[in-house]
Length: 329
Image 1 (tube, rainbow, N blue to C red):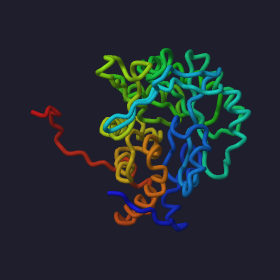
Image 2 (image 1 turned 120 degrees about the vertical axis):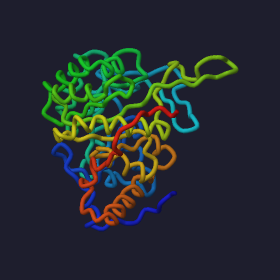
Image 3 (image 1 turned 30 degrees about the horizontal axis):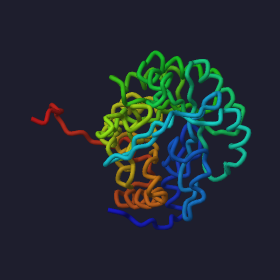
């Protein structure tokens, strides 16, 4: 069901506004890295406003300029999108010097997405962004479409903790560790990242996948494998958010829940599972005004359930008892 977006009153906006690691978020929504470039692209769409979201996460940035992977880089699936961009970006120093001055920090918060091939590179990129107006930094330790660093760090709790610890020494700004779903125990990884100094967690990054051209008998993606996003991964993401919340919730570490949010109901599910904020990404490619509808429906839901603020909904999931086997037969 597609809902219409209704204008929000000041009282409605107060129900959605929140504190996230000491930062004021207009709403619980975050525009995800890789989907909105360096923060300006969607402001050109009529009816879109950065004020509808709590934060915008900029495209993944490395120390030096990167050209990215060989094409093809994108492949649509029946319920999602495969991508293997390979962190194409102009380098962190150029982003700080040329891209950040173009952003309107009065509209929303802006989060840098940090990537690297070594622990030292992550630390240096953090240092560069620390000396900038950026509001917070997301540590991309879980990128599945680069050949070094990335997912190798994200699937190893020890390496994840080392990266977070190195970044922590370079900044007092909020750090958000972006966790990979492609690992055995995401809750343990979350715990290690928190102990190393992460202020928040982004759950989850894309799921590894592949598409094959049967006529050529070759992968469609030039990188062979890619990250799958979109509706297909939402059930996985919801479970991972619930699992991480068991660790992060008692410590008051906020979670950005993400993976397949295309409707207002999806956003509500993630918050109920334990997310304080909700990431919107792939849906923007075909529905750039989805965020205003999510806000409208979220306010309506809170009012119908006699809640005065969205925080009351966080982690309100009521599990069935007793737990039983997940085997279908």
